[in-house]
Amino acid sequence: EIVLTQSPGTLSLSPGERATLSCRASQSFSSSYLAWYQQKPGQAPRLLIYGTSSRATGIPDRFSGSGSGTDFTLTISRLEPEDFAVYYCQQYARSPSTFGQGTKVEI
Amino acid sequence: EVQLVESGGGLVQPGGSLRLSCTASGFTFGDYAMHWVRQAPGKGLEWVSGISSGSGDIIYADSVKGRFTISRDNAKNSLFLQMNSLRSEDTALYYCTSRRGSGWPFDYWGQGTLVTVSS
Image (cartoon, rainbow over all chains, first blue to last red; front, side, top):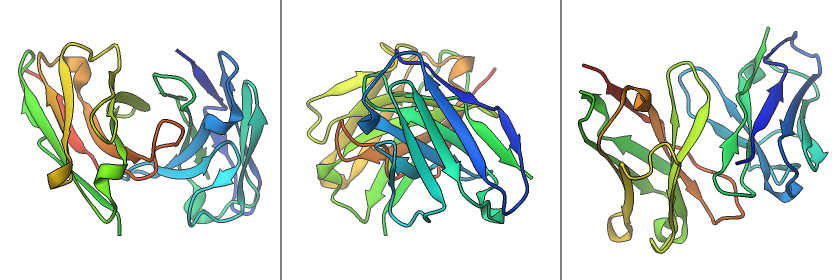
């Protein structure tokens, strides 16, 4: 199975700063099948980005995704207070679909 | 508004069984593949099982294969997960999630139902 490794484990930033989250895969796969989810405490995950760079419905444009092959990035251009959460990457190119271990973005 | 509502979780002894349900509304349930994803307390997300829109394709994580059975009833907009031979490591919040097809991410998620396996 494809193992996804996210870094850093925790990102400590302030509102207004830029956040850059990394997701590295154990083997290459099509960028069409990489997603990012946001999870706040006590809530279900929410789809942010799919196909590496397409924003899901209602997701603000401060969220952007990029990458290819084995290296993918989620960028939050200017952190808003509501963006402090845990972020997971996911590959759905090959079964089983797998998730990274998560990056916590904290104040 | 899309809603996925899970139920059926609870406390069960090791070796016991539980049946989870997920009721969908706000979208054409029969057009979507459905999956279960779980999250152990304080841990990350783990995909568990998936079923295609017409129930023709079913897949399981190795960790639950032979113990869990996924099924659906499109007439009742419902998804199920029969969990047998439960182990302590199955303790988690179980989410029901929808997917347009194999080339799509998990777009809608329920709030989850908690399964605790303990003596």
